[in-house]
Image 1 (spheres, one colour):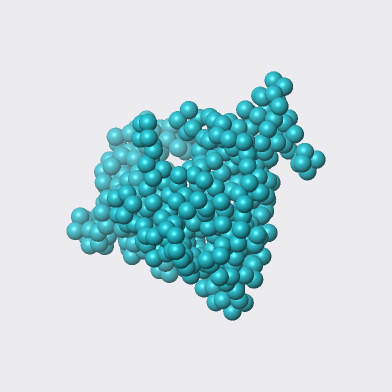
Image 2: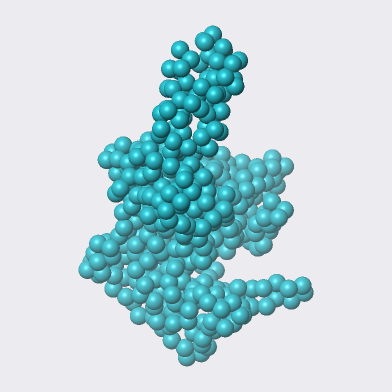
Length: 466
């Protein structure tokens, strides 16, 4: 194995994504709802003898969308297996998953300058959750049977940053497909880390949640393995956990091989044919993905590259932008949707949905700026207010008298007053310091309550001073 790699560290990820379906993978119990322990489960969730699972069609469709979006080779049949292991979170002592024939294989997730190869994409059920309380552990089967799609990469990442970038891009793909909701679906990653100094002996770090934690865990594990190799300790394949509070991994058990799980074909589920017709219908319903939008924003819209990247990576921002440009200048819309809208949402600690800011609000606001009816400063004040609660922008501007000052005689009067109040700035400007006149602009903006256009003010000041 050591001859396969040339980097100092090698990272692979096994990512478990909860699919945003209404019901569980093999029964009709709701995936989400009341959090009263053991209130969303049935004989199938609990593994009662004689209970018969049936597959959630929507979960298959969602998983196939991911396979198509990652250019994976799609299997001709959907085959489930039993993965046998004896943990308290598995009432039936096995998990229904896929082993012999994954739904998708040999796909990729593209990062800037590199494609992360995917070994497999497959469906499986979530185990129950264990609640640790002092000296005992309780089991809650509400989560048991929730639909998961597992994405397994090849060991091709070479740093913690690359692993974090992969997870971010995966989230972008999942959200564009609308098969995952970051607000109510769980995503966890097992990270496989090995280093040159230990002969690339693989260590798996289990159940890491969050991009930052993945980066921290990989960084820690790389340094731990290098340190142990330097001390002459023998490397071994093992499974470790991640303690986010302490910022360190801890040993759990020696790494199992796949043979240890005793896989057998699931006898209670028939093999399902994945027909070309079925895949074709899903392909027709596929949305335009982030990379496609990026190319369109760059080539057709002529947006600046960094701005186009930021908007394209966020499905909700991209949707907002495409609605707004139906009535607003593209450059103006992209600037505000990239910078001002996220700024307000971050300050309010709200998502776009939680803020209730709709395209109509942004259209009204930006049309007023575009046509010179309000200044950008007034626009920033208005979008700050929209972040708190939406309102009719046009009506508010009219009611509060926020329209831009366009009366040249009034602006001229403000400029004359500013020149008198700031003689030093005027003298410095005359001496060749162009920026000195900005002080006078500030005075005029204050006098006009931010309703004068700065460029108009500067032009008037220069005319008066010169």
